[in-house]
Image 1 (cartoon, rainbow, N blue to C red):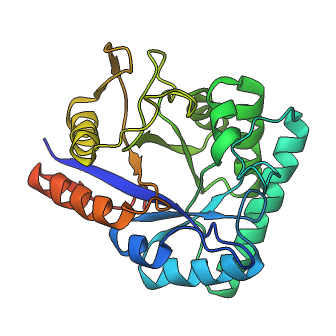
Image 2: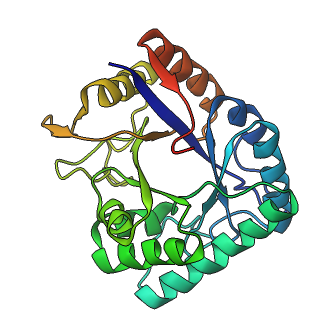
Length: 254
């Protein structure tokens, strides 16, 4: 059986005088780039520059819309109506589309960020609003969603192509959602353990939850965080580990 998987990374998260992440070093090793759209991170200058970097590396351009929470990096839950979510996703995707159009490259996908992503994993109304916004904007875009989540289902229901996403450095709860960052075991800090988790997910379609139970999981794309000090070293190791297990790395969808 032939195995393949997409690798994505959240990039373009610098803004103003603040530099976040190592985009130039990470982008050569991934196949899809989730570019911040100015709400949780990024700004107009960073967006244009990051689009150019991704195009130069042949990486799929993705919009990474988040909650309007620059101080909290979009990771703090907010009480927000579905209609507000719909409009904010349209607004942010449209902003990134402008820079892609100027640089004559189509958008490839949309992946919500942070608290918006996690809310949409279980909240069917918010999930439906995101999926509908993406569909109404451009039904050819691929929706990146947590594997097995309400967002993945909403995307499929509305008629989008959905890429089910897993995380290299995060643990899972028994219900398939990500372990909250407030939990002491939310992050996998040992690189070899993270690599083993990714290979198992791709080849076996299962993962050990944080309580030790084994749960099913689908991996079309793997998120590799680019803002960690060892991000570049890790993504290089991941590429080597995937190759050693005969898992091809290629952009999802097209």
